Amino acid sequence: MVPVLLLTGSLVLGACGATGPGEPGAGAAADRPVTVDDCDREVTVDSRPERIVSLNQGTTEILLSLGVADRMAGTAQWTDPVLPALADANDTVPRLADDAPSLESVLAAEPDLVTASFTSTLAEGGVAPVGTFESYGVPTYLSPAECGKVEVGDTDGEREGVLEIGTIHDEVRDLATLVGAEAEGDELVADLERRMAAVEPIEPTAATGGEPVSVMYWFANAESPYLAGCCGGPGIVDRALGLDNVFADQTNEWPQVGWEAVAERDPDVIVLGDLTRRSQTAETAAAKIDYLESHPVAREMTAVRNGRYVALAGAELNPSIRTVDAVEKVAAGIRELGLGR
Image (cartoon, rainbow, N blue to C red; front, top):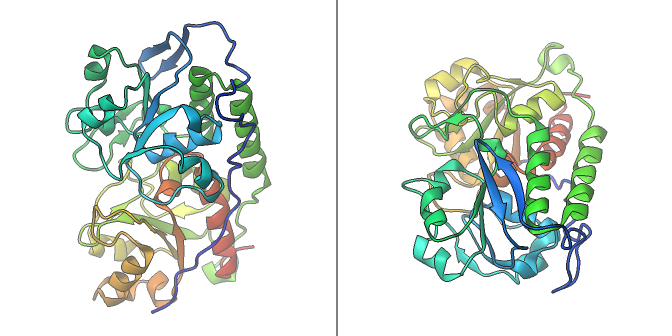
């Protein structure tokens, strides 16, 4: 078995302008109430939140980066370990569940703001719909990366447009406004912008016939893999690096595709989700490689025969501040594989 290419990317600064426990952030003295636009509604907090519950890893890592761990009453729904730079702060926050918590456990934390990264979290079948939280007087904020998505089966939704990195920056600024950490939010966005600007697009080599490197992103599930379509977080990676996603014709966020169809498109490189949760089959990168190299169809693919793998954490494949990490790691991985300059 060819070992997966594991890369250490630059990490978001966990102490990005962070204040000490109990100390107000730069925006704490701002006039209240504060209101932000959130997709097709407004979210208002009447006073600075002091008991925030974050229901997905993406929004959790933003809040930790803003330096408000001392005002977080709980987190849930993790695919991976927290960013190392945020580990100490995260250790101070109660974890309500590794996966989806019950509504009762969230309410028991007495939240004054609930945040989430996915529409499905704040919906029937998730933790609870927005209206349920509102009936308890708890405001909720949903990542703007979910705006304009239409739920289609079990594909994590279909996008009406293309997600841009600026939407992730908007989420940082919105959360910073709601929690009173505007200066920290501006500093975090500036760092993300600087890192993104420093990554150079991939220049194809003779190894790909001078054509753009073709890639496939596999999040999870062996029997019917969830692969990235055109327009979510991996699309940001593709556009930044000049890559060709072999399933860019799919507007679903993570459509499920059969291995015969995957083999027909035969990508140069496979980007593997390296998840630590236990929700689907083939969660880790190692499990995915074992499956690929033993599958009678998949093992004949160019990427598999040549061991061309790059591993990303699940949080790097979902739209989040880790999208910049994904850009950096995929760029480094493809160059290490000799497929680009």
